[in-house]
Structures are given as structure tokens and as C-alpha cells.
Amino acid sequence: MESDQHAISIIAEQEQLANARGNWERTWEEIAHRILPNYATQFWNRNRTPQSDGTQRLHEMVDSTGALALDRFSAAMDSMLTPRNSVWHSLVPSDHVLKRHREVRIWFEDLTRLLFAQRYAPTANFSSQKHEDYLMLGAFGTSCLFIDALQARIERGLRYRAIHIGQCFFTENHQGLIDTNYRKFPLTAQQAVTQFGREAVPDSIAKQAENPKQWGNIHYFVHKVAPRQDYDPERKDVQGMAFESLYVSVTGKQVVRAGGYHTFPYAISRYVTTPGELYGRSPAMLALPTIKSLNEMKKTMLKQGHRSVDPVLLAHDDASADNFSLRPGALNAGGVNADGKALVHALPVGNLAIGDKLMEGERVTINDFFLVSLFQILVETPQMTATEVVERAREKGALLAPTMGRQQSESLGPMIDREIDLLTQLQLIPPMPQILVEARGEYTIQYDSPLSRMARAEETAGLMRVVDYLKDVVSVTQNPEPLDHFDWDTIVPEMSDNQAVPMRWRKSLADVQALRASRAKQAEQQQMLDAAPAGAAMMKTLMPKQPQGMA
Image (tube, rainbow, N blue to C red; front, side, top):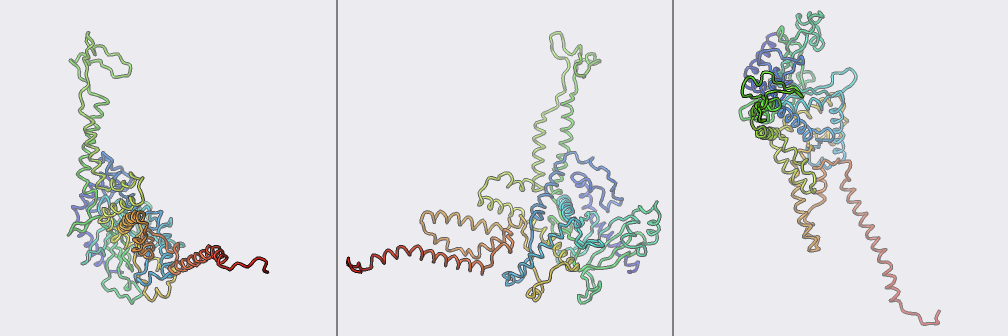
């Protein structure tokens, strides 16, 4: 076990990172109160214990437009990047020659199916945690997902957990890649003993865990994951792991667990970053002034609406309002004069329609910030031709690629690498084909999500535009030769790849050529059969006629 001095150093490093992001946390707190209340009051740099007792924190969220837009943003991200009902990525060999090798392609398809089976297993909890991850991304601009092996005695598999950004303090390396994370999190005394063991935790925590009146006391721990300085890939112990892992108890300033990881276990992503800034900026940050304005408008509209429904009454003198009753069916004497003119009037409340129009404009702006309007493009115009759908998808993909594409490199890519590493350690991956072993098993991730297909729709859209044009040319000229310029044996397989058609559903090139040869042979035989009657008739006419009466 590491010395106490090492623990003191780790705690100091975490506190230094916490102090450096005070401005971020103030902004996050402001956002959380207005669109994600359950995350409010949970940022560590405010030097207070986070509230996790179910307290309602809705007093600053007057209008729910921002919260609804954030939820739709998360749902749209999930459907565009990680849709549960489809295979949104595949694995292919990095070697271009091996990509044509059927056995290798089928092995990678089996590995892809294994990944999805483990990822969406009930015990993995991927779907709910990824939804939380997208919520944090839309609200705070930075999200964190922890991927680890399932801690179960019998079942083997993966486990996912979305980590509150308030707990994560990370740094980048010289290439701008996040490779170090300090996570500060609370545990009760009993939880600490269960996780780390009675002998590992400080004596004060161990004694509290034995006392039923104190085992719920909260203590804080820091989990540091960073590149190992003494890394030796030839070693089989923790020194052979690329990342060191240290759990430190703030109480007692003591290292309670030391270990390591072969791959970085935290998938940390940013929505968009400004040069020189470590944390990401979110749609909610851009929409915050509009959300604040909308909240104030809503307050005014509620006041005026209340006055409109339950109006303030104006009377010409005090006497007429002394016994004035607002009960249904009440009779109020003195409310009108002898000529029937009303002596009591309602206070004018302004033009509510104008206020409502102003609020609707602000709501549209907020939805634009969270890309809600963009995601509605295909939904609102369902009656389109196939070419129009491809064109619209291409335009949509071009607009989404700069921001959403980053999630593939910072979140999904590292997550998939981590999953494969864990499944390898758990010995759940099938044996590689020998030819792939010789290639060291190198692979490439191909994203087949709706967003990825939109990004790749440019080629398909261009082909369909040209083919649509050539169809008219062929129809007019009755000459199919313009279509001969296309190599359909290359186009069809690549379009199938772009549209995520499984390899096992498709024939190999040899099978396609054999089918064509068989079809050509059948056509030739049919042509011979069709020509046989005509040939027989011709032969009959050419044969010399026999003289009558001759045998």
C-alpha cells in the first residue's frame, strides 16, 4: 500500500483542479437550477455537502421549455448515435486486404454482436446511463461514463455508470486527449468497508461501520486514474497495465486500494470546446440568457393571467364596494346607477396575446439551441421520394456532423476499446482466425448509426441524382450505354456497407459470378430452345421435295 504522503499529494492535486474551475461550477449550478434541478447543489467547489435526500429544487424553474428541450436533445442524441433497436457500429479489419476475407469479416460481425449483447444486457445498465450521459452533455457540455466489469459472483459481463460531472476533475495530455481523471465521491462508512475491506479503510471509518448509529456517516474518497509512469508492457502484474488506479480516503488521508487498468475506464466527452479551455460548452450555456428571459416573461404572464381571471375591481367610491360579493349568483346593490351604467369595472391587464407571442419566440430559440427544430425535419415532411429523403438526410448530416461527430472520437470510440479490453480479460471473445492473428487483430470502428449514415449520404445522394438524370436520357434515346460508366460491382457492396447491411446477408463475389454464369447459361439454353422450332421449319423448307409415288 502507498504511503500517506502519496495520498496527501493526490488529495492536493484534486483540490487544485477543483479550485481552478470555480467559474464553470457557478455556471453549471445556474443551469442545473433552471433545466436539470436534480443535479443542482451537487458541485463540490461550493464547499457544501450535496443534497441527495429527494429535496425538490424547482424554485428557479418557472418555465419548463428548457427542461423539455434538454430531454428531447438527449433522446435525439440517443436515437442518432446509439439507437437501441439497431446495430449502430461495426468492427472491420484495418488491413484492406483482410476486409475482403469472408472468414475475417464474419468473425468481426460475431464480435460486434457480442458487444451489443453484453452492452444491452439487463445487468449492464447501458441505456439508462447513456441517457444520463447525454443529459449532462446537453446541460453542462461535458459528460463522463465509467465502464467496468460487472462485479458479480456468478455472471460475467460489463457495467456502465454515468458519473456526475461535479465529481470529475480531469486533465489532458500534450495531444489534447483526456488521460487523467480524479473522481471525488461520497460513501457511507458501511459502503466504504464493503467496497475496500475492513483492513484497508482508516480505523475511524471501520469503527463507524460497526456502530448502527454511525454506519450512515458520509466520507469522501478520491479515485485517481492516470498513465503509469513505470509502465512495462512485458510485465503481467499491475506494472504491466497502462494506467494506474488509486483510491484515497480523504478521512485519514490514506490510500485504500491500488491497482490499474489496461485501458482508460472513463469515457469523457465534450460537446464543443473553445481553444485553451478544458471543459466543454453546452447548448444550455448558449440558451441560458433566453431561458432566464423566458422565466421572467412567464412570471409576468402568470401575474397578468391571474388578474385577468380574478380581476382587480375599480369602484367610483368606497361605499359601493363595502359589501361587494364575488360569489356565484350573488346580488350586489349599487353596482350600477339608475341609468344602468356600471359603477364597478375590472382593472385592464394589458395584451396577453402579445406576451404569449413573445414567449413563443423565445421557446423557438431555445429549441433551436438544443437542435430540436433540426431533428423535426424528417418528421414534419414524411411524404418524400427516396431521392428527397437522401438529400434531406445529407443536409441534416452536414449540419450535425461538426458537433455530434465529436462524440464518436471522445466518447464512443474509447468506450468500445474499453469494452473489447474487458471482454478479452473475461475470456468471452471467440478465437481469432489465424490470418487475423498474424495481422495482430488490428481493427477499425465503422459507425452505422443514423447520424453516420447521414454523413456518408453525400456519395449516395450524388449517385442517385446522376442516375435519375440518366434514366431520362436512356428513356429518350433508348440507349442504355450511359449507365455503363458505373461499376455496379463496386457500388452495390459499398452502398450495402453504408446502409449497414450485414455481411452474412450478402453473397460473396464468387457466388455472384457463379450465379451470373448460371443465368447466362440458362439464357443461352432458352435461346436455343426458342430457336429450335424456327430452325426445324427452315430445314423443312430447304429439304428437297420427294416425287410423289416414291417410297
